[in-house]
Length: 148
Image (cartoon, rainbow, N blue to C red; front, side):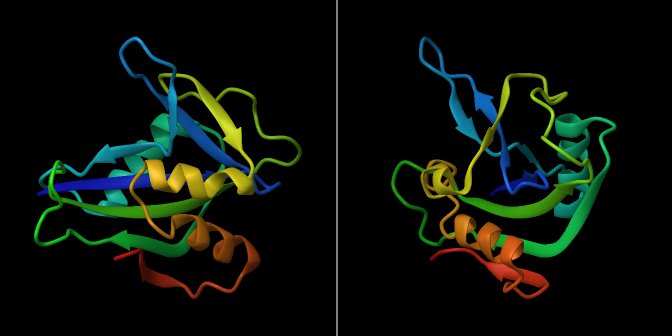
């Protein structure tokens, strides 16, 4: 089973950091930054590692909400068995977010109306609801199960 940690980095204005998933011969596909969880690593430790790659030394605050997409059984046709956790962080920088982040590729900022399509592309059902609830303060702290 593949274990993946996604990092949702939000600006103080409520924009979401996206990174380019380079597709051969095509346009970049914008996705949440993510990384595989190593054998001796927790999901939170993997998220911290990915976060360092995304924001470098920029100050961030970690949220107490964790979205979980548990592995499906049976595995859908054409997909590998994957369990994913989404960790939310807020930039602690006033004003507009930086145009470019230290991530190894291209980055951009997405407005909330773009989130549903993004989360579908990342196979993270309800992650847009998780992010909205986090920003609006109605999602409780702790682990939240995402989608079916």
